[in-house]
Amino acid sequence: MRLALCLLSLSLLPGCFLSRSHLNQPIAPETVERIVPSSTTAGEVAELLGAPLEVVQLGYKSAWRYEFTVEKQAALFLFLVGLRGVDNQADRVWVFFDEEGVVSHVGSTFAADEAGFDLPWSPFGEEAAGEAAPDGVAGPQGASGSAGAAGQQ
Amino acid sequence: MLPLASSCVTGTLSRERSQLAPAAGALDGLVPGEADLDACLAALGAPLIVREDRDQQVLLWGWRELRGWSLRASISLVRGANTNFSFANDQDDLQAVMGVFDGDWRLILVRRGRLADLQQRWLPRVPGTPVRRES
Image (cartoon, rainbow over the protein chains, first blue to last red):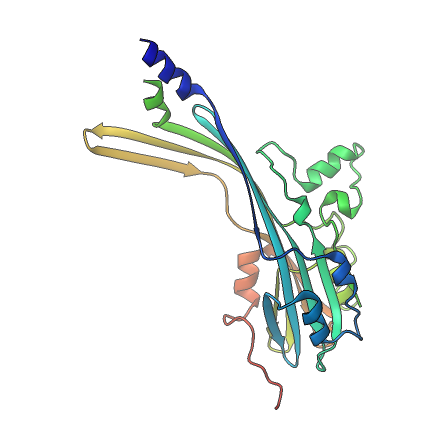
């Protein structure tokens, strides 16, 4: 009888897990700021950021991609119900080069730190911004989702 | 009985987010013929995908914000024979904004929709194009 009660109690206990994984090396915003359009060359970009994850040929021009990805998962298992949240965010930089191999544009998004251990009821970016601004006016970019987005020429 | 029952019917609530959706109004200033690559990068950040399609450049920004649930049932009909039933109401697709640029990086087209649809419609099947630089 005791054994049965123990087993029954164990079966009712919830289980949970948190996990964090990342892919590639972090990208420092200060390093990206040192890339100056019309001045920095492809060789200098490679010295600053290393080998790109992807190279796309655009006719005589090209573009390099750098990316650091973070994924966080949270899950809670109750008796018959499971709750699970997955958040995948990235720091991503695209460097565009002209025909001479000189940087023409830089686009960057730094959102890896935005990844969170969220469960199903957690609000998304726009919802969170709406909660922060009860009059329905969306907050600045950082609050509503495009944190750290920047482009420069 | 209870441990056995838990293996018969289980439900899962899930939330999945991948990348960040553009801020409200981020697309307002991106007018074809007026905006350029700088304006798009400033408003939307770094794109997910950059490709060349003939003489045009196609950039895609994508994100997923999904809430869903699933139900799974397993019933033992006779000894050694089980039947399973599962249902999920979530759709695994990314939303996206696509910008098409001319050779001078001027925005000539903006589209919004499912990433898979935009890729199928606009992007060449072979990723990237051969290097055409003359040696």
